[in-house]
Image 1 (cartoon, each protein chain N blue to C red):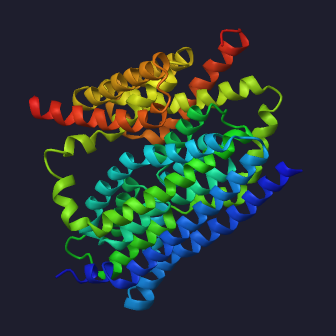
Image 2: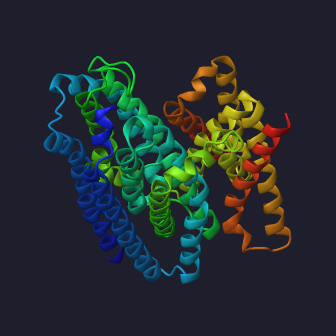
Image 3: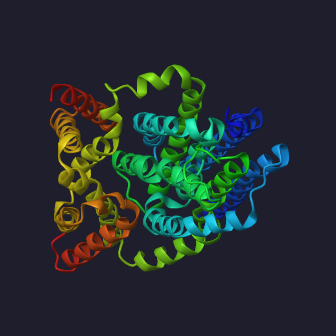
Length: 237
Length: 219
């Protein structure tokens, strides 16, 4: 029996997890209230804000299932509660396993959960996971205000350029995620094209037939549709 | 005046929450030490931290520079605490702003983005918690050979749909970074896995092209 897994799956961390997720939900609710009140003050319609809420719910569900799949790859080596906590706050799956691996290597152990992976080595993995990824939080905490002020000064003079600039920044990010399946080909490419095709269909329904209610669902539906196509194509070929 | 109050409140609360998240994160390894007497050697931990620093530092700086102006202050504090930015929070916020027809970087955008990210954080947290409770029955289903290809390709599925919404509207800006990335990945395929490092490169190319087109009056 790997004795570190007994520690890794102990009640203490499940309790920590419960505390931490209550904390996230509380924080989210507080910000939602703050934003909603400010929205009313500046004349945003309730309808628009409720729509943002619905979009948030609908577009989140499918990608979150992928996070659970990532969680499953981590639990055999790191137990359940700690990966759960890490993926609920701050973390993202690929970095967590890498950090845990580096934590083990720096103690002279090569494989996670392998021979020599004692509770001390496990502790080292967890220290690296928890402390290593803290920097983004620290920078945001201490510098976000300054960064925002800097950005605001830079673009305030020209609102039209500002919106183009923001769009361009994200399109740059897009180009990576589009170019990757385009050059890999195979299933990723088929998935990308299916997603795009389904979204185009929705866009036509929304614009031509004024089916505005579809707007909030289009992204979630196109994702699910694309993934169904992936499964079908994988089965067929 | 009102605007100042909102901004101030967002920053004050944001800092308090962020620091508490930091303390909570430290609680976990500390309790392994306190409850189970498992303290790793300090030198090992420092060595490990130095090992991950280049990656985490780069990712942190890149994400902050690229995403904070899109998400607004409230959205940024929340998004950075809950994580999963590129695959979840950022697309969700942008899509919500697009649907509400508000612009990123404005106060209206900030409000919509914050509401969307707050909702998204709550939903994610709850679904993951449910997933943890149902881990035993769910594992064989989600890991089955039948469904595996779908989850392996969740990012292409997400960005295929998003591409239609954004690229179709901004295709003039999109051409250059897209061609650059395709060329790069054909040339050095392994780079496709260094997404975080390429994010600023892609954005920078897009911004430069956008600026040129804008100055010449093509946008």
